[in-house]
Length: 298
Image 1 (spheres, rainbow, N blue to C red):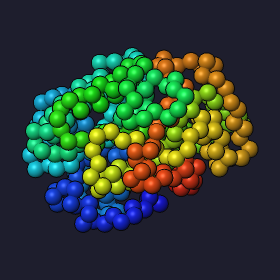
Image 2: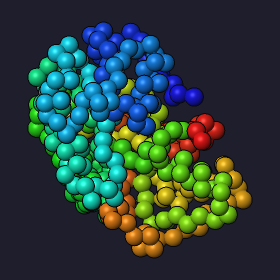
Image 3: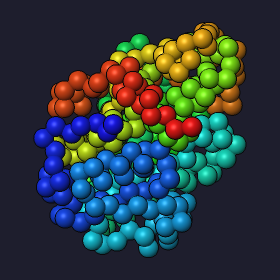
Image 4: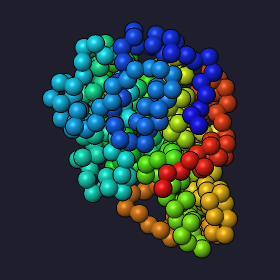
C-alpha cells in the first residue's frame, strides 16, 4: 500500500516538470522502485535510467545522457556498500562524489532541477541531540566521505537542487536490514543485534512520497526525511522478528562484539523540524514498518 499524498494530483505533479517526464536514475534499486511505483500511481510519466544508460563514473556518459529538455532529475543511484567502500574507495568517490558533482553541473547547463539523496553518515555520529540540516558534516570512513563530497559538489555546481538526507532505508523489496532480519528470524531461534547505535528507520515508499511533497511545496536546499521516532538496530530487529516469528528471540549486543571494516555512527538521528514544519509530523517508524512487513518479498 503506497503512502497517500494529501492534496496531490497528476496536474500538480506535472507543474513541477512543464509536462516533461521525470527522470529517475538508479533503475533496479530500492528507492528507484519506490519512486517508480509512486509516479505510476499518480499518472506521472517518467524515464528510468540504469547504469547502462548513464554511468556516474564517466563524465562523458553523464554529458551524453542528460537531455536539454529535462526539467527534473531524481538521482536514486549510489554506491551503498559501506564496508565495500573501504576496499574500493575510488569507486565510491566516483559514484557518490565526483559523478554526482558532474551530474549537477550538467543539470545546471540544461536548466533541470536535481533531487539528490544523502545520508546520516555525513555526520560523525557522536551527538547528544538530533543533527540539524545546517550542522557541519564531519564524515568518518570512505562511504561517509564520498556522500559528503557529493553534497558539497551539488551545492557548488549552482544547480537548483533538493538534497535529502535520510537513514536506515528499508522496503518490501531489495537488500535492506528489515528483509534480512525477517529472513533470519524465520530460520533461527535467536539473533544478536547491536543495541548501541541509534538512528531513524526510513520506509523507501515514505521517502519517495515525502520527497514529492517537498518538491510540490517548492523546496530546495537540504532537508531531512525519515520515519518519525528513533530506535536502535536491536529495537528494529525485535519489531520485525515479533511480526514474522514471535518464537525467535532477539538479543542485544554491542558494536564492539561485531567489528566491521567501516565505522558506524553511535548516534545519527536526523532532525526533522524543517520538514515537519511544512508537511506535518512524519509517521512513526513502527507505523510505516507495519505497512511494509505484510508485503515483504521472499
